[in-house]
Length: 507
Image (cartoon, rainbow, N blue to C red):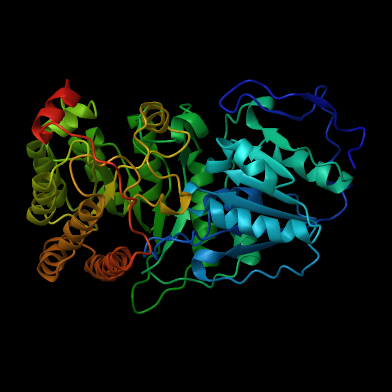
């Protein structure tokens, strides 16, 4: 039943336009949070049906961590994370089930939601995927949250308590999130099923949100937005100390905790980045973070990263082929030679570089794959990441590929960045995917692992993660060959030579 608190009105026309839903035309004033009846809330992180095991899985979803941190204290919270094998009890009398979604796990999210709704339990779906696929998600939920939840979550909870959930809560209907909240690690730990971790496992944290850049294959500009928001140094210090206290236990593997920074891009504002690194240097931690390559050309930034405890900096190299870089509008300033020089300089300063590379069947040949593997091994990159170009909903790349008919498979389970879902006109799709996986595995061949560990700092983390990556890639190859994740066969076009296509694309 819909109470008088909810009125029917058109949804605002923004990134998720075209739907009609129940939204506040004159939004009611929120009652004090303590005035709401206590709710029993279950928050779920699903695991996609084809989502690989990963050594890099976070102890909790950051989206879930934020919701826990901003939920009023009278409500009871329970977290289930299927990436860790947590079971779901569908027979518990929850007042609300919230499920966060990414493209690769959304089908599993829908299945979970359907089971709870069959039992009469209200379900709210949120996250990146459903924010851009409202019509698809609507049949599986009582309400869809689109965009950042900080300023709308109180409204959701009040409407649950009042029994009048609206079908849609869009962040664009609420004040912008100009300041991001700190995480409440003690409450997250109490609600989750995780135990304390040693120095081999990372604790997730973020200091910034948003990114001013507009990379075509990134969803950030259209989800969290281009507004770059930075937490205060004091808030960062307090979160780190709380996280260390509740989540970390010293062991024979080390007495210093490892944090995984989940910021979209730590290095945007150099002066503010320096301020953050000065604070981190006082916190006695190790950490890994994504950072723009341009910042690594600055000796002071590299020195501060090392002194602050940076284990490795993840850099989006994308490709070592100059023509491919031009196709991604990165060829004017980037080159394989420049990459190698930065990697060498950073290693001498004590900073490991973790490279992120991508292959595109419309541009990259098997020779390019080999060149990428050779570059990774020659430069002894720590924990390299290799992906097949994947147009995720909500990105500019998805819109462009959809318009041109270049997406051949929208089985969301395959959207792990390791499965071929786009046109592959120049090669057999199965062969291309297996070649990609074998070159990725080549980056984790035993000789590559040995030299990587020998030439980089933080040898334990390097060795453990390399072995886990190697095992995972071997499992993926078996899975593709067995047919569990085989790419769709395609009607091949009569294509021009790949070199010609690359030249046209680069122009």
